[in-house]
Length: 474
Image (cartoon, rainbow, N blue to C red):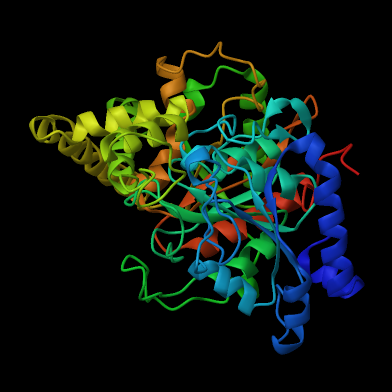
């Protein structure tokens, strides 16, 4: 495969797009990663009016919680099966203005709530490296399509690690910029204080080019930043001599798989050989074990409020009933999967007036303590690193892990720190274990996406996995 610039140099826009559409359709029985295919002819016809740029004539995929005017947008939920937006998300307009051609809407965990991509209304997304394994979630469809070489770029969203964990399982770069760096206008929300627009590529250069296109102030999203947007690609530099790297020791100590630990240690030695200054740091263990419960309370309380309008009357597929109340109950009961209903119960309980102070507000206070601890630990370092996952992608039917064990709480949930703090964070391929990818997660201080791109480029030098795709997909 090739980077976006290399594709442009060797193919026409129509050739690129038609090849991607054909490959997406051919891979659908194997990956089940697409919810809706998008007609491309009008988009191709419009390219003559669009200035040349990194995305000109480039096929891209959007997660199915990104609103697209006139194109069904379901968030992989039965209740939104009939939803056709009358407007574009801000990032859709930005991508199209840059010449991108949207070829498909990608599967996701229902309403972006989950880390497996097993809960989509259209069924699970399969990992392109091994169809018996998960692609990860909630942005698994987007990750799988980039990993399979269908498109060079796909949009996801990240509320806990929903871009960065699938990136690890699928062997691609998954980028979550600083909170506010990309407008969320037109993205079906999960948790407003944690949601980030993210994306997948197969190279650091493409990731740097993409953020310049997507970033910037949007007055329709009051949380978006008006900070100037650097030319990340022009500044890209894989020279990391003297750069300071913090190894997240709590996570390393929590790893149970010796092969993952050995691969990470090999990566650390390679970073040192390139001149990086690498030191171990630790965060408060009690706060790390509180990440998951605090996340569940904050995210599910906010989700319950955000999705109260999905009732079959204001939005959603309406089920019959003898009264308005019965219509709403039937519509939500049949429209939501069991995991979503469970999360709404948790969120509703946390929002009861008598519970807000002892649950929701307490979770917010714990979040603040975590943010302060991270800021203190990272103040002297450029990036904080750890394996993005404690293992390769799990089997689809693997329910053996103890998700409340001390090790799991830290090793599999530490990337939520990027959402609690809003700091930029990305996952890059670290290597393969028995033919399956494992990712390295990197977190930088607020607005320092450039450090992540530079270290991602350095990792490409180390691993040789730049632009790698899963085998057996052609």
